[in-house]
Image: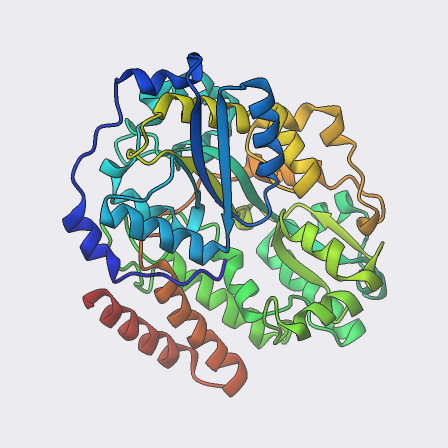
Length: 427
C-alpha cells in the first residue's frame, strides 16, 4: 500500500505505446497442444502462487511457469518500465488495484481477456470487482479478479467491555450502524478507558474516503476537491472525530502502532480483510481479544486486492489465459485464502463449508470470513484512482496531520493542500 509512483514515465509510455498483436498464431493455442511452453509470471507480496503453479504444471506437463515475486513498488515499476520500452514484459503480471489506473492508459500493451474466453467465467465473480477490471467502455478486460479487501470493524473486546458496549459481533454491528453511532461508541470508550477509539487520523479519513465513488480524480483526470466533494466530506469527518478526542496519533505499520495493536492502546480499526493475517502474526499478547463486525453501510468499501493481466508481448496468450483462469477459479481462491489469507472475489467460495467454518483463534475462535463476505457484498464499487492518486492523497493526509499534531486551522490546511494538489497536476 506504500508504493512509490514512477509518474515521470507516464509521458514516455503514452508516446511509446504502439498497438502490438497478441493474436491468432498457432503458438497462442499452446495450452491446448503438446508444444512445450514457458510462461513468465510476475507477482508481488505473499500469494502462494508458486505452489499453485507447480500444481498446474503437474496437470499440464507441457507448460512451465516461472514465478518471479518482488516487492509491490519494485514489481509495478519494473512492469511499467518494460511496457514503456516495448520489451521485457512477462507473459502474465499481477496488478494491484491502487496501481491499476496507472496501467489502463496502456490498453494496447495488454491482451483483451474477453477475446480469450473471459466472458465464460464472468458470473463467478463479484460484479463490482469484475467491472473494475474493464476499460471505461466495458468492452476490454485487462485482468481476471484475484483477492479483494472488504473493510470491517476490528475491535478490542476488553475496551468495549470497560465502556459498557456489547462484544458480540452481531450486537456490535447492530449498535454501531451509522457514522453517528460510530462517534457515540468512540466517546464511550474514551470516557471509560482514556484510550482513543480509532488508531489514526488516516483511518478516520478513510472511513468515508474508501467508500467514495469519486475520490481525488475524475475519470477525465481532473481534480475533484471542491467543497461539496466526497473527499472534503471525508476530510471534515476526520477533523470532527479528532475534535471529539477519539482519534489516536499512531501511524500504520510503525513500531508504535504495532505495539498499540498488541497492547490494546486503541479500541477499533477500520481494516480490510488482509489486516487479519498481519494481526495474527504480529500481536501475540492480543490473542482472543479482538473481534470483527460489519461497518455501517456508509463506510462499506474495498481496500486492496489485485488482478492478473496478460501483456500483449506474450507469444502464448491463450496458454497464459488458460492458466490464470484456473488460478483464480473459486476452488483455487479458497486454497489461496486458506494458505495466505487472500480474500476471495469469487462469490461461490462464500458458500463453501471450509470457508464459512474457518475459525480464528486470534479472534476468540470467531469465524471471521462470513463477516468479510457480507462486507464484500455490500460494496457498491471501486472509485476511480488515477495515476496521481497517491501524491494527492499524501497532500491531503499531511494537512490532516498538521491539524491533529500542530492544532492548525482545518480550512486553511485544506485550502493549502488543494493548492499543492493543483500544482501536482500541472507537472
